[in-house]
Image 1 (cartoon, rainbow, N blue to C red):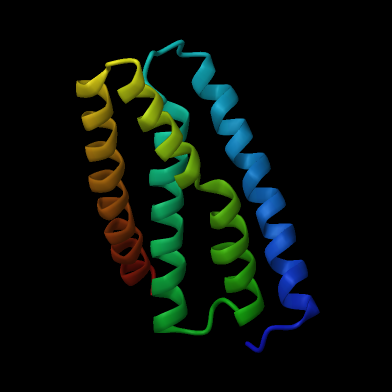
Image 2: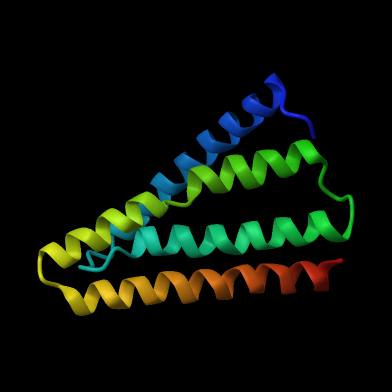
Length: 128
């Protein structure tokens, strides 16, 4: 799909929906009152699952139009996942001398994200 005004609109709308969903995840996570940033971890891992699924569907068949893939992958997942927030939270944990928590958070985010992308691909393969 060639970049166009429609492309920008699709990414912006998807990003708005993804950002709102991310905020919702954060509100739900606050209810648990944990000292661990579970909302960001949940959004990042779930976003990885979604983008893995979308990428596999896009490769295997034409269930999703290029416009819908753009809306979901670049837009929704871009707005939903929070890598910059992840890095800031890790920095804050380190600054507060919570090194073990920071290391666990990095590991859980990286490994969880990779597993979620592969899971999304695997689910899409079963689905198609």
